[in-house]
Amino acid sequence: MTKAFRTVLTIAGSDSSGGAGIQADIKTFAALECFGLSVITALTAQNTTGVNAIYPLTGKCIREQFWGICGDITIDAVKIGMLGSADAVIAVSGLLRELQGKPPVIVDTVLASSGGIALVPLKAIPIMKEELFPLASLITPNLPEAAMLAGLKLPPATQEAIEETAVKLLETGAASVLIKGGHGEGEECCDCLYIDNRFVWFSSKKIVTGNTHGTGCTLSSAIAAFMARGEDTEGAVKRAKEYLDGALQAGARYRLGSGSGPLHHFYRFWQ
Image (cartoon, rainbow, N blue to C red; front, side, top):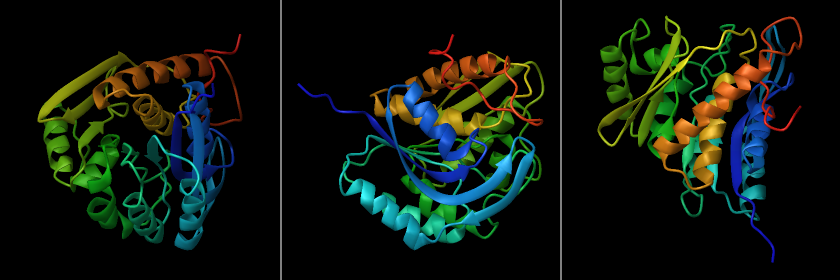
C-alpha cells in the first residue's frame, strides 16, 4: 500500500548561500517530514555577509512554475516568502485564488534583508496588503516589518503596543497574525499570535548566536509544515518555535562563512 507525501509549496526567492529563502524552506519541510515543492520568484547573489544583487523573475515565469506543479500534485500547505516585485505579488495573489482545496497559506512578510537591503519595492507593499494578506491563514512579520505594515514610525516595544499592532494588521484581512519578537530588547523572545479575537503569547529564552541567517524563513516554513500535517494554527506555531529553538542552538556550534551563518535544519538527524 502506497503512502501520500504531505506537501508544502514554497513561493519565495532563492538564496545562493543556502541559509534562507527557498533553500531553507525545503530543508525545513524535509526535516519536518514533508515533501517540499518550490516556485522561485527571484534569484539573489548573496553570502553570509549580505545580499549583493537581486534578479526578480517575471510574473509569467512564476505562473508557469505554479501551473506545472499544481496541475499534477496536491498541495497541503503554502508558504510565501520573498516576492521581489509588485509583478510577483500580483501574480502570486492570483495563483493562490486558483488553488484547489484551499490549503493554509503562511505569508512571511519579507520586506528587507537583515543588512537592510530592500527585498520588495515600496510600491508593492500596499498591493501585498490589499491582494495577498486577505488570502493568508497567517502572516508573520517581525517587529520592524509590523511597524512598516501598520504605518508606525517605530516598532512596537511594549506588550500593549504589540497587541494593538496585531489588531491593526488583522484588519488587512488575514485570518491571524504572528508578530515575532526576536528584535525586541531583553533576554526573552516574546511572540504574539492574534487569532479568533484573542492573544496567545509564546516566550522562550533568546539563544546567543551569530548564526541567525534564515530564522524567519525557517519559522514560517515550519509553521506551514506542521499545518500540512494537520495542526491548527496555534499548535503549529508552538511546535515550529520549538523546532526553531533547536535549530538555532545546534547551529550555534558550527561556522560557515565570515558573516551571519545558518541554522542547523537537520540537527535531529546529525550526530
